[in-house]
Image 1 (tube, rainbow, N blue to C red):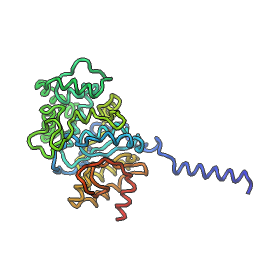
Image 2 (cartoon, rainbow, N blue to C red):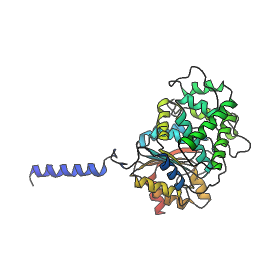
Image 3 (cartoon, one colour):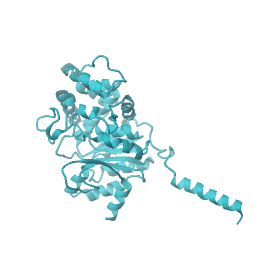
Image 4 (cartoon, rainbow, N blue to C red):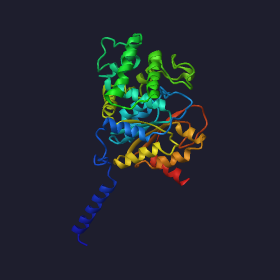
Length: 364
């Protein structure tokens, strides 16, 4: 064989390897929408949802005090421009700001979280910047001197000195509800409207000191809360190990990432049990149909409860149906690995390859 033929053959092999094993590029997800209409958004959220479920806490606020420590590693591993799937409340926004997905689903067993996410959607869309967002959220007039360049600490320090305003509460809630029901034309039920009012009242009553509660028990307020749970202000003004604030309110650029998704109807809330047979399956089907790969799946410590309720095997099947590759990762906040628990009382945040875990799960 001539030297020229050998070189040509090697060139073909190298090109073939590049095609087969190259990192994903913009061709992937070519059927993914750049925007959903209001009708498409509401239909996708509604038809993907299951019946309302119950949980031991309201989860209006995250309890993951150290969530920012994970974000530098997350940004190194997760591929931007893909799909994000998560559970729970505002912690999703900080992860979304970090991985910059092209589409996002937030799936939670409680219909109350659906209403929480709708209220956040309206807040993002109506707020000009982070300071405006915080003022609308807690029904407080905007302090003088805050700009788009203000730090999160400066924003929350300024609002801590401003009392909540009942007139602003009434006006803002009416505007937020009208934005969802009239501007978007979403088919809010009477229960949805009560859910919106419930969340907004909790924000008004407790302000930036609102924190996670194991159960409602009469309120969400009080600095630090039982078990030392962080307040909303704590979560938004903390930093990673390098001293950088990576919360979604930590910078205007982070805020804009989430606002853009919300404005284009590309962050879709869904009611569903991770161990159910409908919601996650519907999400997986939609992502496959639109050619999208999951970059990040934030599962918190839900697997612990799926184990306890005998639903973990169904979750394993659901996760196995997601379009993933070797770079797709789980974000966990729990005591153990995939579906398991270890000793100790503390919760740790971790990243884990989805493909490895679902393969082990399927084999078992």
